Length: 289
Image (cartoon, rainbow, N blue to C red; front, side):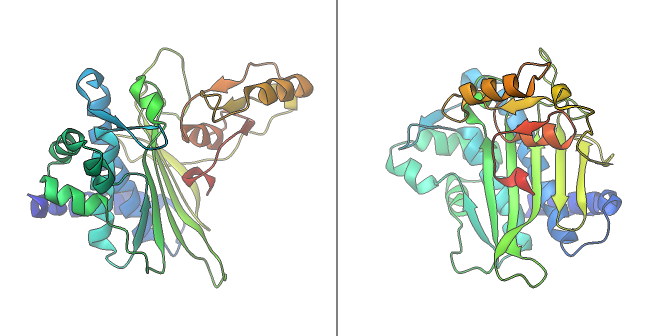
């Protein structure tokens, strides 16, 4: 089954490689193409599971944060896709199959394996792939904004590649992909709408582009030039533990913003900002590139 899945993934890579010619030539074209295809594959799973939340197995990690079948299944398909193409790369990822099994969460693992269409043994091996001695690393949050996911709201799959860029001594993010299944197809946020979803992709020296999830219509992104700070939009997290709402309100008053701060979960905030939807954002991670 996995051999069949990898053939499909290679076909997807060929299709996306053609569509990503929109990007200027850059050193990480193969990696960016693979990352986009992997994030899209994860979205197929997470979107389906979010629509059936009542039947989604979930567990709680040691830090009291939630982890769902969708987190584990998405991590599995992304690492599997990238690991087969870049066997020397390491991975830093949110979830650990071994930890879940140790806490007695086998049902969550079994459901994730079914969602990813692999065996439990295969899923555990893939999800826990790390390769600590690698020279470069993929950093993955399979579902950034799990609480938003569980509410049926915004979340994203956040993926970046950390490498030494053009002779620099320190490693930095050189590729970044955000998959935001619930934003509108133009990258905006509208109340009461599930959205068609977007993929936002960037590479050092190549710029940042966005496309609707189900299409390959890449559009270059630039932040909006506003005539005045008062026309800006402040974007922050939903949970008070992730954003200082009081500080946001004070900043909005000081800047005399015309609009109330917008609150949404996950690094989808960065996608909204990159598309010109905001004037400031609290947050970090894969969306920084």
